[in-house]
Length: 217
Length: 302
Image (cartoon, rainbow over all chains, first blue to last red; front, side, top):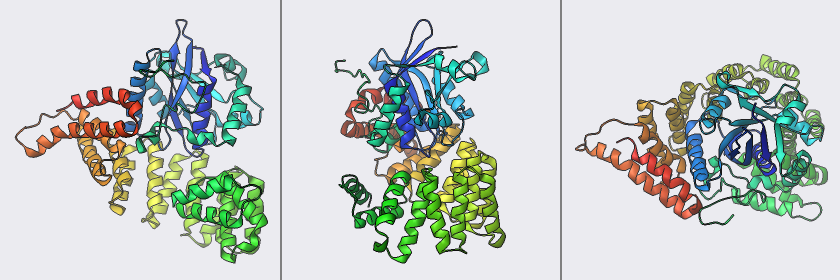
């Protein structure tokens, strides 16, 4: 099983994406790096779709642009995929999600998948639970499996927050939500409908680091 | 109107103390006209309006607002608040199916799907073509996660109400969720008949054909993307990218003498130029990511 640390800012973006479109299913890619021991370090989340996850064009062009971005940025690569379902149910990876995750894992064999568990999200918001995300790894030909056992404590050990913790994430999320900042997060589909909308969301998270040609770190 | 809505929202947010009645009324009206779904905000402002400014509303608008606020409260899972609004509506309109439907929606929001279904079937027993009840049955099955039952219920509804564009759009959405692309395509063929000037229908239809795959589907998709480019005066990134993606999958040998085939060869070039123009103007920071993709896509095929 692959362990995984995720930058708090990346998790905040995933929550913001889901919060911006509460009645839709949303998805996106995770970028970062994969260390020698197989530990996946997620540094950023790029939101992709919110109208429908089933159509290829937006997904393909989005993945291609993110790939270009990581090639230019150099030290980053596509390391995973995230999905949040419209329905209020347990965080499972749908058949479609598995297909998309397979495609994403072509970039990185140790790719991880984060699924937002809406029931746990409710508990997270009420401060009754820490981690609202379900982590999936690919178990060879057997496909995508939940990390660890069904026990929350076990999967907590597999998914760790970097640069913060679950409590700080909750506080940041509430602040962001109250200020309606999630409405300033743009996904790739919104960029397709209005080129000026920045799917990199450079101004969204102050903790994210970007490497663009000509820019210093 | 969208700009008006943004403006009044801004004014409401920056209001000190209780916002004024006319701004609240205007906000709720614009939301109704534009079919915007921003339930927590609607519930909040609607609540203020009903609590402080009932006398400012005509009888008709008062109850329209009650309904609007009840639905918004249900959508925001503010169940107690929704219940009080729904009770008030039922007291005022005791024999109304429209009011009963709200009761059903309350049970849906509370997760009591059985009770909700009872209410809708009661309505339909006396009025088999009650639009609202038929639609709620679809929503119910969706909430239960029964995609196929939702599809069946929506098909039954569309048998009666074949001109409901939103119904066809929702059916397409259900088919896409079920990964039944052929049936989703059929829905868009219906929609295109109803609204032949709607560029987003052309784009969606092309997206579905492209996803289905194969040279024949890509060729058809390309012509629909091309129509969308025409309808949007070359401004749609989806349509432009779509043309390139399709062209990359179409690898027929083309006779250069044929004028139509020459156009096919020129199409990727023209499309690439259009895309670069848009990115230069609106998103120059993305050019380094887009250029390699365009080179790859237009280098393929013909």
